[in-house]
Image 1 (cartoon, one colour):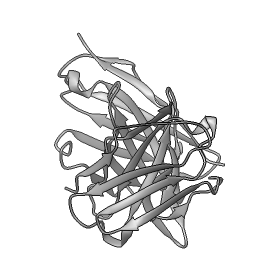
Image 2 (cartoon, rainbow over the protein chains, first blue to last red):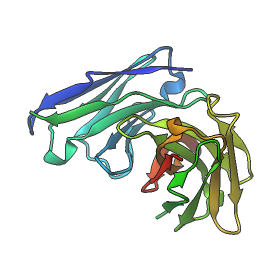
Image 3 (cartoon, rainbow over the protein chains, first blue to last red):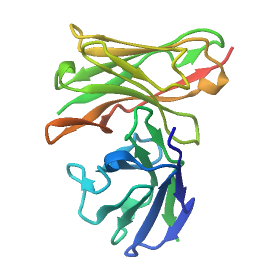
Image 4 (spheres, rainbow over the protein chains, first blue to last red):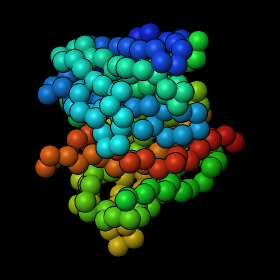
Length: 108
Length: 122
């Protein structure tokens, strides 16, 4: 099983600031099969990024993903009010799909 | 646009079997892979397993002994059964479809149901 660790646990920022979220895997994620999701309270998760760096349909270009192997990053270039939420990474490089514990981005 | 809707009892007794159904609308169940994912209150996400319309399944090894998934193509729906439930199975249960891009399926989830809360309690 690949264990994903996300940091920081909570990120306190102001609208307009840049957010950098980290996801580290316990072993290399094959073919960079790493996805990012956004979840707001009471809602289902929303797919933002797949394949480490490809944006899902309808996702604004202020969201970008990067990384390879065991280290991945989600960057939100300028936080909008609607971006304050919890973000999860997920690996699907092996048959057992796993999620990270999440990073909460809240308003400073 | 495909939409998903979970249904099933909101309360299940310990040791009994949890049964949920996901109805697929706006598209054919034969077009995608389908997963169940759960989220205990205030906690993170756990993938339970996925099924293809042919009936082929892959389960999370940690739950495999208790999980059964099935598909009914005539009703455009798929189902989850989780046996011998305990309080640790209390969670919001989501059904989701796998992303299809560039000619193949990713095990990332681009369409989700709204989720259904299931509480295990006597």
